[in-house]
Length: 149
Image: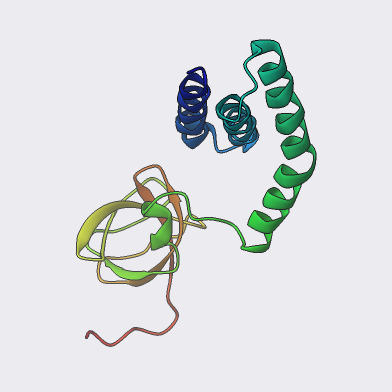
């Protein structure tokens, strides 16, 4: 009945992997599942189960992790937060915006904003969000106004 302990270890490792996103703990969890399978198939010696865990984990680290990391890079840079998805969106200043601060409205919300190059953007200027810095949108003016929809 040792197999369920290995499954529990695998579950804990997978949950910890969700916090780190490094794919190392996921490979260790795969080794733990291999040890659980070995225990269920009749390998009763804990030392042999540990060896199976170590060997499978090492193989996964050497071969599968590298492939997974390369595959993730092909997909492109992941957007890590919802706020980062605002980059490229357009809005309008609701106060004067400069390098020190100001306010814009976009996506139905009013955000703190700063001018990207330090220029003064008067109230009513149409802008594009080029970066999110904490809770502040870094903006630059749009050369031609956008028709309201």
